[in-house]
Structures are given as structure tokens and as C-alpha cells.
Length: 409
Ligand code: PMP
Image (cartoon, rainbow, N blue to C red; front, top):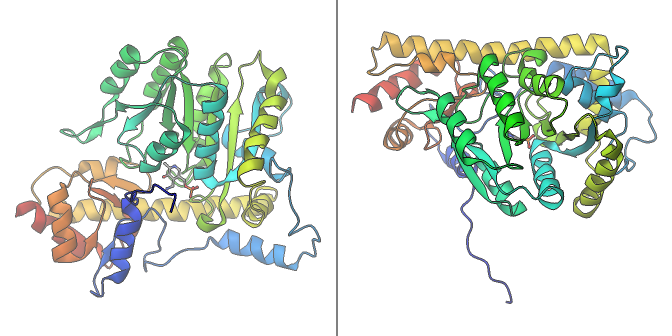
């Protein structure tokens, strides 16, 4: 062979999931992969998605399986914008909309990747700053884009809280003009810790003053709090209040529509208000990258989202489905917390109910995580990240008991 290939370490989530599936223990619990599960531990195709799928199936649309435009499904793109940036069709929105170049992507991962590639080619940032810790794939994506990576502090282990001061002082003193700062729009993965509104305002000010480029990753809009407005607050604040700053957003529809395998996403590049003339050239260059990579995003998932977002009744159904998912996760956080308190498990556990979104950074050590797996068949990431949606009324007491034991021993 002429190849030089060395083994690449697979993402821990996938090896953990395989180990979980191979485990035959009846009481095993998966708190690894970030997917929504019902209280019975089953996948939950959203009822609104089922409804939209039935309507689509009855529709004799001859175009259904045709190619789309390179930038994606043209009718989907403004809907993705409206959802992310909060446009409601009022007069006077045109000026703001003119700042945004949007293309369809292969879900949130594809949006992150396309964005990284586009910036690497056309902005050449000296450094991209990722939170420490961050979604593991951010590291991979930016490594492959060839942009030097550094991390800013995010998690304060001793207090199990967001290290706002650490983040600000690093970004203040160590960044240079033109650096990219990757920000999780809500439900930070893996810590579940988000800045407060006041803190977001300070981060926006700092980005503006230091001429940094905010790159938002929005993977949980509506899924985290149940409200699409609340979960888009930071993105919309930057967009509306910093019109002289440029930024971009990688938008995923995987979690909030439960369309994981359908790969629905969008990438939005936002120009500053004086650079709207180059918007079409930006789209054109994004299309160039898309054309070489996958020609265009896939259709079906996108058609489902389109069907829902263009029908008021279905939108109301969707908001109810978001409430179902986010409130079940909230209630499982409380159930786990209450059990740990009842067992008087050594340590403090308030962070479990204070964190946001799919994940809890439990504060368990790697040794405790291994003990949970070996002794109790409870699977979570070595960092102590637990996917709360793997908890249920049936297994939460068992999991709490297992945590109690490994913490004491
Ligand atoms: N960013 C973050 C922070 C995520 O947690 C995820 C989902 N794991 C994604 C992006 C992308 O997910 P997808 O490609 O399935 O849309």
C-alpha cells in the first residue's frame, strides 16, 4: 500500500454505546449518547413529526426526490433564519435579514464543519478558541480545517460552576484581533452550564472590543428550556445589538425535532451592517464548498421541518413536544438530585438541578465512572458527563444508589 494510516482514537461516545449494547445485564443504564429517550428508555419520534410525515406521504409532490439547489431547499432557508434570529414577518426586518447568508447543511455537524472550512479559507483566523471542555467534535473539526486551536477556561471544577471570570480574563488577555471564539448558544455540551444574560452581554462587548469573531453552535434550541426564544437569546442579542460585528451560527435540527439521522441543519454567516453587498458572494462561496463536498443537503428531514414551520397548528404541536422533552429531563434532574440527598451521598449535588439541557457534568471522577460501569452497568463518559435523558422513573433510584456507593468507596 501507498497509504500511511495510523489508528485514530474513536469518539468515546460511540465506543461507550457499543459496550452498552453488548452488555447483557438486565438493569444496565445508558447515560452516554446525547439522544432523547422516553421514560421507557425508547426513542421518541415527535408526534408532530409523525403528523407531518403522514401529510407528506399523501402529497403527490413530483419534486419530492429531486435534487435541490446547491444552497439547499430554497423554502427551508428563510424558515431556518426566522427560527434562529426571531423574524416574525414584520415590516422593517428586511435590513436585518440582508445581513445573513444562509445555506442548508448536513445537520449541526455539517454546519460546524462548513463554517470552519469557510473561515479557514476566507478569513484565516490566527486561532480558534474553544471552551475547555467542549463537544469533542469541535476539536476534530477545527483540526481538520487547519486552524490552530486553543481553549479558554469554562468549567470551575471545585464549585462545579461556570468559570466566567476565567473565560473573560483569558479572552481579554490572550486573544488577538480576528480570532474565532466558539460559543454554545445554549445547553453547553458537556457541562450543562450557560452564561447568564448579563454575562452574555459582557461576552458580546468583549468580542466587539477585541474584534473577535463569535461562532455560535446552536444544537439545542427549544430542547433545553422548552422555549425557542429563550434558547436563542444569546444569538439574537449578538445579532440585534452588535450590527457592526460579524458572526456566524451553526444550526442543528437534530434534537429539537428528533430528526437525528435525517441530518437537517443550516449555516448562517452574518455580515456587519455595512457589508451586506457581499452577502450573495458569501452564499456563492459556501456553495462552492458544498458542491465539492456533498453537492446539496438531503431533502426529507428538511421537508418535515418545512411542513411544521409553515403551519400554525403544527408549530403549536411542536412547542408542546418540546415541552414534553424538556420537562421530562428537568424532572429527572430533580429525581436524581432528591435521591442523592435522601441517601445523604457525600458531596453537593445542586449542580445537577442547576445545569441546563441534555447533559449533567456530575463531577464524578474517572475512577468512579469506571466503577459505575463495572459494578453497576451504568454507562457515562469518563469526564463524568451524564446524559439525563437515559434516566427514568424506573432506574433513577438504582442509578442514585450506584452513585452513592461509588462515591463512598
Ligand atoms: N454541537 C453540539 C454542541 C452538539 O451537542 C451536537 C450534537 N451532539 C451537535 C453540534 C451536532 O449534532 P448533529 O450533527 O446531529 O446536528
